[in-house]
Image 1 (spheres, rainbow, N blue to C red):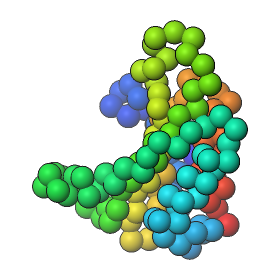
Image 2 (spheres, one colour):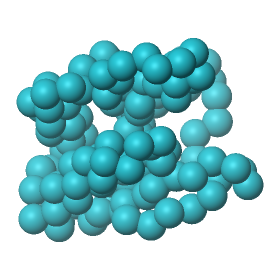
Image 3 (tube, helix red, strand yellow):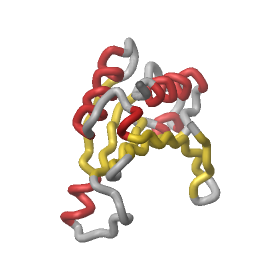
Image 4 (cartoon, helix red, strand yellow):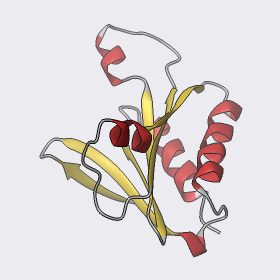
Amino acid sequence: MKKIIFMDRYPIYSLELLKEEMRVSSMDEVAAYFKDKIEKHPVAKFIALFDHYAHTKALEGEIADGILDARNIIFCFGPSIPNTKVLALRPRSIGICEFKDKIVIEFMEAPREEIHQIMQEWAKGLIK
């Protein structure tokens, strides 16, 4: 995974996987994989799967060349509410974009390192 700073302020982690190097072969399987990981985690809670591509297309919005599908897996790791500000960091989202030959997985850096490590492990778990 590589870390970039998007728009000069957002720490984003990105993993590009060629479809041929993945353990799964479709966007539905990638989404199901992440949902399963979330549901099996003792603290994480699956919230929704958002079809970002369909939403943007319905609005006749701009979609970058080559993107065939785009979804967000929305979930929460929040085991406590120590203050009001933590709510601004939750829930978490993992973005999944499909191109002809690859899948791109991206998410913002989590405020807790152990949560961030879990999300990286999940993403890397898609590699054969």
